[in-house]
Image (cartoon, rainbow, N blue to C red; front, side, top):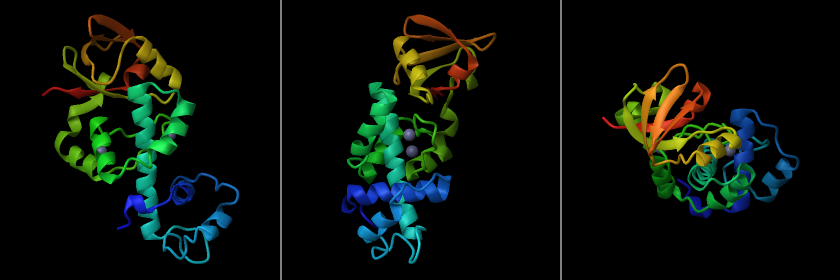
Length: 212
Ligand SMILES: [Zn+2]
Ligand SMILES: [Zn+2]
């Protein structure tokens, strides 16, 4: 297994682009081929000979890099309220610091988020699989709770930065205690000493670590 620390930033970036192209159908950036050759990714065994398809090893290294990148974005957006464009920039730097063990801890801390702030799926890690087996039902969107049920906000899965700002301006943050009051006609919940009514779409973005 290749250790994360042995990959340069340039290698990591191009591996991520190739993975997004191959797995998620994103367009390849211009100059990708030149970069692959220049960085010697064929010789390293990450890219299959004579093309730009990732090898099994390359796919795995790239998948973990994507995971660290999107977790870093999630961390910056949820915990620090960093604007989405800035989050993208900072995430590129932060992802290189998220060595494998730390990524698992960040993932667990954030409640194993499924998507980055842009709505792109975060590839699962070993921690997510373990969590799915044991406590899957414990973290769920606010609108899946029963009226009267309490919990702690695990994370805010806001695809639009404006939505995140809305939550933050309401004084709602990951880690805050929350209780669902009712679900219709709008979703009403208590957080701290305040009570809020939001539409269902917004309520599905609040992930709650449920007691019990
Ligand atoms: Zn993203
Ligand atoms: Zn996880």
